Structures are given as C-alpha cells and as structure tokens.
Image 1: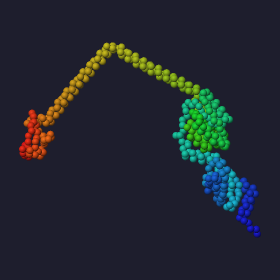
Image 2: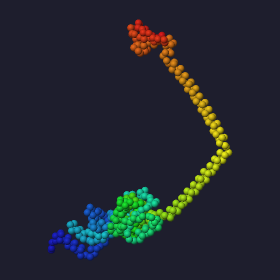
Image 3: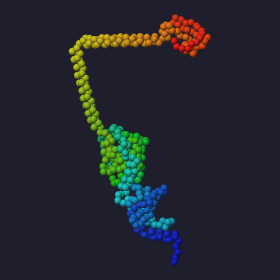
Image 4: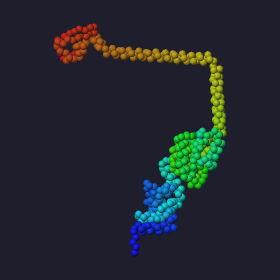
Length: 400
C-alpha cells in the first residue's frame, strides 16, 4: 500500500475538484453567517442551510464590485468555484458573484443606503433650501450628448431668453460616473458660483440610473450651498439624489420650468401690480380731495376773523387759569416757609437764653453736667446780651 504525505493527498483532492466541471462554476443558495470583511478587502463567511454549511471567500477584486452590503442572516446566491484550501485541508467556495435572494441586488443596496443616509439626516426637510425667484445663471450637470441638455436649453430659453446656462459635462452612467457628477457639483460650489444647479439625466433602467444613487453624489448634493434641482429619469423613477436635493423634478423639462421664471408671466404680474398701484393712488387722491373740500367748506362757513376770535378767547382763558394757579402755588409755598421758620426759631439756643438761661462753656465746648467740672476750673458763661469769665468755686449735684 502506497503511503501519501498530507500535502500530496490534499493536492490530489484539489486536482479532483478542478477537473469536475460542475464545481468550476456553481451557484449555491444559503444563509450568510460569520460574514466579515478584513482590512485587506477580502470577505470571509459561511453559507448554511438546515443540515449543512459551506465556507466561502470573496477576494477584494470581486468584493469591491458589490452594490449591497452583505449581512448575517441574509439569503444569498453565491456563484463561483469550489476548491480546496490546502493549509487547512478544507474545501470552500471562491465566490465571483454574490446576489441577494428575492429582491434584486440594486433594490437591496438602494434600501440599505437610503436607511443609513436618512439616519444621518441627509434627507431632512429642514435642510432644504428655497429656489431663487429670479436666477440669472444656472449650472447644469449632465451628459453633453442626449436629449436632456436640449430639453433644458429649449425650455429655459423659451421662458427667459436672457437666462445664462453653464454646462459641466459628465458621464451619467457606468464606472466613474458618480465621481464625475460629485466633482461637478463641488466645482460649481467652490470655483464657479451660480444661482442654481440642475443635476440629472434621461430615463433608463435601474442600472443606468444607479450613479445618482451612489453615496458620493448624494453627499455632494447635500453639502451644496447652491440650491439643487434633481431631474433623473422619468416621473416614476426615484433616486437617492431626489431625496437629498432641494427640489425634485419629474423630468429635465420640468426642472427647467421650476428653475426659470417665465418672462411673459413676470411682465403680466408687473402690469397687474402697476394697475393695482394706480388704482390705490387714484383712491387716495380722491379721498384727500374730498377731505380738502370738506375743510374748505368749513372755513367758508366760518370767516377767519371768527376763528381767530375764538382762538384768542381760549388763549385768554388759559392765561388767566395759569395766573391763578401760579398765585395759589406761591401762597402755599409762603405759608410753608413761615411754618418752617417758626419751628427753626424754636430750636435756636439763643431763643432759650433770652428767657433767662445761660450757656456754660469750658475749653470751647458746652458743659452739660457738673461732672465735667472741678473746683478752680475756668469757664465762660454766655448770656443773651454778652458773656463773662468765671472760676468754679464749688460743685453741688442735683436738679433745679
């Protein structure tokens, strides 16, 4: 019996997998579990059903093409090649393509990204900006070819021949389209300011419109300080750009109608305003004329001399009332002054002295008690009509 090494046997088994045609391109349906993407960009996971499991790997070159975010518990169909991982001696599926079961890949990717960006507030109504009422320059982000540009130009010029349109041509589908669209929006915001932006393309499949669902485009629209009208596809088509834009137009032609005010309508509105203004002025003039006529009739009924006599009488009466008031106020103040003067006189020390009392001072200060004096102290005695010096001979305590 031949004895094989582990490596030799593993390589043999691997070669058997390689020659089996079914295993070279096989699709497997199962539930994702243990899904993880490493820093290298490679994805590792397990596909399982009720009774079995199969390891799977998806290398970076294929994983970066995924439109949706795989999640554990998601039903998927994985297509690829079954082979042996020699180091661990296990067979696994090397996945080339991974699709969700049921809803299509794009539908799942759309809902996943929509939920994530909505949670960040990118679709909030309070962030949306009003469109300028009278734009002079409009930036257009779309393809150079196709009917979209022609429709926008035709409708815009029909509504306002003087409107200025500036095109930034981009891809609108396929690889690199999202990056170009986002760059165009940033260009207008950072280097070439305009009053308004129209971002869009014509109709197509979900795959054709996908660039307007990609995160870079949605974030560029949200970050734009210039108001943005999205005009992607037909009325039944909805993209994430529509949710992030300030206004969504069903078609590029409608976008032009929303963006450009019709000159003829403006002139009609100006004419209506002019008529209302003329009517208001005429009404005011009529009112003022009537008022002047009423006042003129009043003056004609009463001669100016009578009006002057009436005003003169009123003036005399007012002067007399003012004089009476001033006299009354003066008398009241004089009486109050006399009362205050009498009170002040009653408190004057000289008033007390005149009644036979005296003030005794020692060293320039009034003496209020015998305890402040001693026998032999020199004192000054003040009377009503003069003063004299004295010497204390003796002290006696007690009242009068």
